[in-house]
Length: 427
Ligand SMILES: Nc1nc2c(ncn2[C@@H]2O[C@H](COP(=O)(O)OP(=O)(O)OP(=O)(O)O)[C@@H](O)[C@H]2O)c(=O)[nH]1
Ligand SMILES: [Mg+2]
Image (cartoon, rainbow, N blue to C red; front, side, top):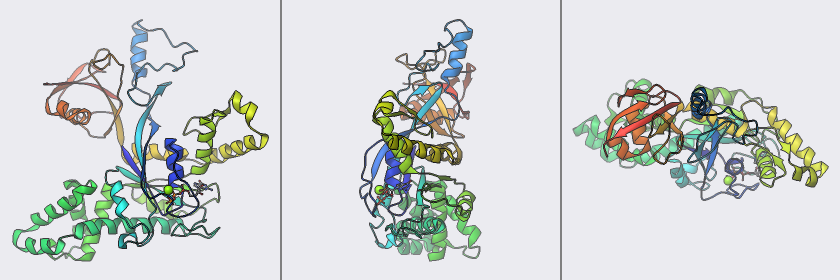
């Protein structure tokens, strides 16, 4: 799972990146602080309890495990994650974040940093646009104090730039291809687009979505060989929508309450979500936590002072942290982590599957309990999961076993959320 943080310069993309990944990066109140992209990993909790809670129940009811003691540091969890963690059956799974340079109007014509860096977004499953809702920066990211750009303008120009970028990729060689297509037919055109767009992650599915969109919106343009700018733009927009679903972090919300509903309706009508955030506030809590002053879980708005904190923080520092936390808890949506979870589990409809080797004990070859929690697309089959674990496992797939029921499942069986699956393959 890979998510890109995009937006105009100076909105808090790097601040959000740093709050989520705990990686220190350059943050400053002027445009183009970030030039080369930052890439890092953050962790989000699965919406449902980890499968180790079912395993624990089974073991307890068969008398093979005592009930949890109150002093258990893992609060009942018995899995051994290869990556991430699990405590109180709250299983954390990794999400890769990419924080790129700011985008300004006209980027596709080379303005600002141009749009070369957009290729860094190519393999992203979704984008989060960070928007400055405080009005403290103009469309180019210059600090203006107040009265900066309108959030809806910030959003629409970004969509336009992404479309122009995709269109620029599609247009290379178009004249030649459209001439050729007059002899060879539509297939040559579809192949051209696919060839041009695979580099940014598009498949036949995305190109087909683009073609359907042109058919709907330009009903008289039946011959693709004669398509001009308008049809190509419709195609680019449709490809962008299916390739890069977008949600919005309405950031710097600590600075000014923003009540515009125009942005929300635009984003939501395309399947996205808007959540109020203060990346700066979340980063401050995160820093206080890593310096040992407070105990704070990323994604929470509450914290507790540690003994160190009680001893070392001044009254002013304490009340600053408290005011940050009360601001964060006054907003719905769970801040940056809440937004990420909504993108992954809501907008992208990801569910989780736990591949194991031994369907009786739910362990891998090394005896590790439920080591992997893999995010899969809803509708993924048993064989699809096998491929996601390893191409050898997919190619040699023989059958799988649903470890919860003990039943054999075939290659085409669609997995459900939380399935524990043992895959048997020829080696
Ligand atoms: N008030 C407030 N300021 C914020 C918030 N998030 C970030 N900032 C400030 O906004 C400025 C820009 O933050 P960055 O994270 O560098 O922004 P960016 O979008 O990465 O900027 P570029 O890399 O230049 O595109 C910094 O001064 C941050 O401290 C926030 O939630 N509230
Ligand atoms: Mg930055």
